[in-house]
Length: 175
Ligand SMILES: [Cu+2]
Image (cartoon, rainbow, N blue to C red; front, side, top):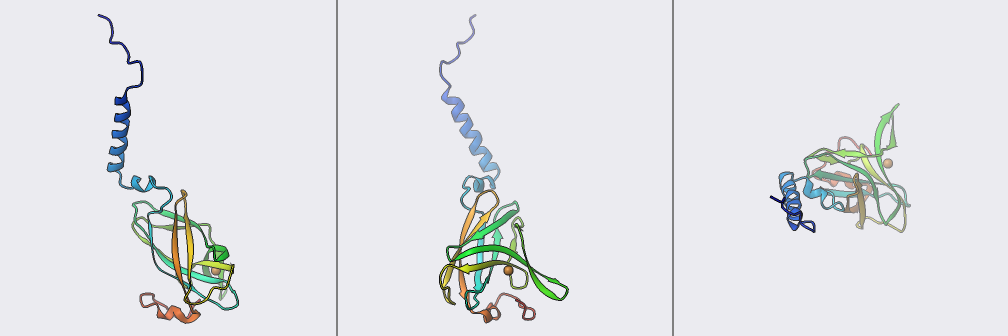
């Protein structure tokens, strides 16, 4: 007997099979759904605010980030149209004085929170591109490893406003 002739063109069956495999893989691993939309990070932000200082001084941005996915997510930077320079900083006590160190990234644990707060990690907003005043809202774009980003609106508050954040513990009067 002669062998069955090979189909002259690639079969649509193989294409359907490939699609089925793709869909199956996506259903089997929910985290892949996030990877399918690289522009949007699997992260939610809450309690975003900026401790305003007069005369265009650098201001600290604080926010709690929640990782919705089952893998750690690295925040690697931030930017804002209202500030020419935005950096991730960590405040540490050294020899009795508080120093701020730039950090390349912070990791948000899988399914957990990372909190920027006074006296610890903060988003340093420098060189305002125009007058920023208490009551304003400043858009900040958070950049994550892998190319995803998230825009968060930070409420600008007066320097003493930290004590008014009901849910935020404020031991002492640290900056
Ligand atoms: Cu700083």
